[in-house]
Image: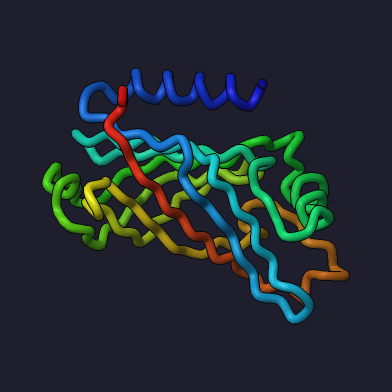
Length: 183
C-alpha cells in the first residue's frame, strides 16, 4: 500500500512540474547484471515509473528497490538487506535531460541519444551521461539504455568474501514504453 501511494505521489508531482506534452510509463523495465564465476547476478524490475517531458526532453525514473526480483530468494534477501539496505534507501532515481533534444524525436524512428543527469542510488547522487535510444517503434514511443555503474561509487559495500568473485561494474539495462500522460 505504501509503495503504491509513493508511486502515485511521484507521478502526480512529476506530472504537475512537467506541464503539457508529457509521457508516462508505470511499468518501465530496469535490470542489473554481473557475470560471476560462481553464479551470474541478475535483478529485474518491471515496476519502475518514468516521465518524459515532450517539450524539453527532461526525463525522470524512479524504482522501488524491493521490486527487483532474482532467480533465488536468498539473492533477493541479500540484495535488499545487506547491499542496498532497502529499508534505509527504499528507492533509486534518475533525473536528467536528453542532449540536443527536439520534439521530432517523439515521432521519428528510433534513434541514438545521450542523456545526462543525476543518478541517486543508496543515498549517493552522481552525475552520469548514458547512451540510449528513443523513438517510435510499432506505434509506441520507446526508450532504451544500457550502461554500467560501479557499486562502490554509490557507497554499496560488497563483503570481502565475495568481492573478488563478482564484477566491479554492473550492467544496467533500461526499457520503457511511454504513453501520453492522461491515457
